[in-house]
Image (cartoon, rainbow, N blue to C red; front, side, top):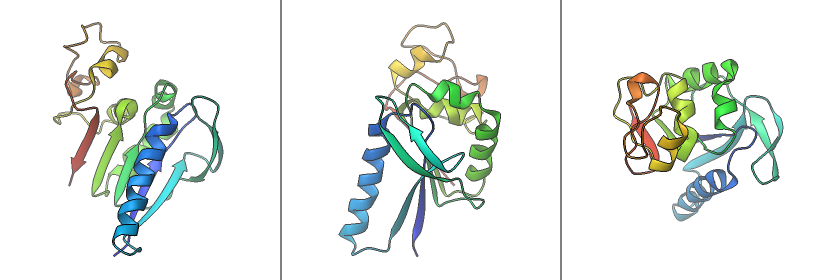
Length: 161
């Protein structure tokens, strides 16, 4: 069974947050002889997306059906992304039936804005907790239930169903 992996991008996303996971799944697929994973880079709307640092990529539109894995990337554009009500609704919709929902670094803020971390144990990097705006020190950010993230390690969020 071929697993569909969606890597969700937005303007000013971090290129390495896209390239790293994409290559990890591509390599895993190669190691098993192909056919295990179908990786797609997607955005709210189909077309060009300019990433942090100026790299422009082509993304397909978000599908209607939930993927096996929804991966939300981080980057300096995450705060604008999480203010986009259409994107927040799309993340919530796609996560509903996804087997795995995860983020890279500050992509966790988009998951939190989508309500996906409410009441759930979640961790993120201390640098990211500084960026959440809760006013606490680097080592003590708020809980996911208040819409902010804990300030402990590691720098990713994974939830399985």
